[in-house]
Image (cartoon, rainbow, N blue to C red; front, side):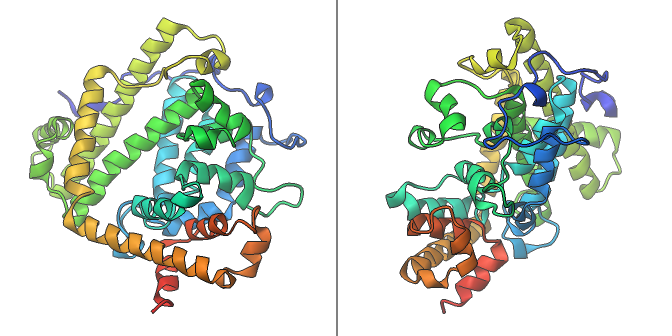
Length: 384
């Protein structure tokens, strides 16, 4: 097997959007109509608004797995979002879908994440349970719909329906009822666009494989442990055979990039086969289905599941990560109690810009969710 064997099998460039791709000119539009741009299509404008948002800039200092101050080389929510966008555009291009839309979704999908990653989210959800809970996907939508407050003509970023649809990957039925147009599919058990489906897989491909990378560099997991995972072992063997003198650093990079290529290739081939079987003619045909068209082959799905299970056991439950998570959860819980007891500590400008300034629990949740890791740590120190 050659070094290039892990490259995606679908390699010929394709031109023109497929009939079932989303098109800016025939989409469901913005909540508040706007004049079109002379130089950019509407999904490019969405992407640009996301990149220029305050929430996007704050992703630079929000953790992926490791707390931000643990090291400068580990992934942050910002670098993760850029990696997701790169994978997503590759997928969209090969399936002749809308690259601008999928890029916008990828860049915005984590805007609502709390400081300290999933540990922070779990803590904030626990604090908010008596008040409706906290879901980071719903919070990402809330950021672009309500919390960004820089335009004089409207709240939020006034993004297109299709971008907002893709941002909301998961949603409880209770919350979906309050979300109007973008919550409708969860009530009807329908699917989002193929661009949204692909963005979800691009997210998973990026964080699984890059968590392997960060975990190895941090010394929390080892090559020997990972060789128990078939997907890793297969590609590591190929790297050792092709580059017998490669350093461990080179082995890590060469193995992970082959794993990513394999997942992308399988996802494209399996999804293309489903498309050829179902033969959707329009994006609405995709939405009307009761199950997604995007997905791996069964064999690859099982291998990817084994990787996810390994990461859950060996990385996310590593004693060091567990200690960091426990500390992070305590910080978020302490901050929530602090602001609920003393709401005057929340900056007046933030309160004035809030869409619900009289709803104190949601106001506090919005404020904490927007914090970076280091700002949350600094604020927590003031409690001592």
